Amino acid sequence: MTYTLYNRPGSGGFVVEAALTLAEAPFELVELGSKPGTPLPEEFKETNPWGQLPTLFLPDGSIMTESSAMLVHIAAAHPEKSLAPPPGTPAHAKFLRWTVFAGVNLYESVARRGYPFRYTDDKDGYDAVRNASIRRMGEALAVAEAHIDGPFLLGEDMCLADIYLAMFFIWHMGELDAPHLAEIAEVMRAHVVVGQIWRRHFGDR
Image (cartoon, rainbow, N blue to C red; front, side, top):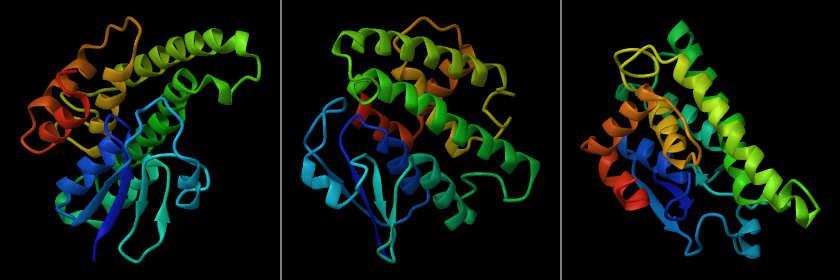
């Protein structure tokens, strides 16, 4: 029973690949050749009608989209790996809060920066959309930073939400004073499993 993950190097599927690897779940990685910030091939809509990466095929052949949902599912499908707190606990509620927060607010800011044409039909407005997205992403990261209990988001134990937030932290293009997020990103770079995937996607960032 194998997962299939569609992604491209440097894209947000990094965190899903890391989750599957930490779960020790068998998966096939299908990497598209295009670069992040460029449109996907039109034929990819046959796989994901919304035309987004990552896209995950579950072992039963059903399709998942939305990175946040994939992380929640992978953690629940492999509870023995402790990738998230047990469902129904206050800690799990916090995990859900910040995983969804990242998908809704941080990912949306990245999309606005990289694909401004999705958000305005006025080509003269593209720079304004990009600039607002960078500002908004910084504001969202600052909110997350203020709620980190340290050393990780939920306290002493790393969870998938930490990997997610670290990815967005290095993607941010503006000024940001976020020592907790910076430390979490450093942990990911040095992590024996996550670090290898990180370097393949992001190099030395």
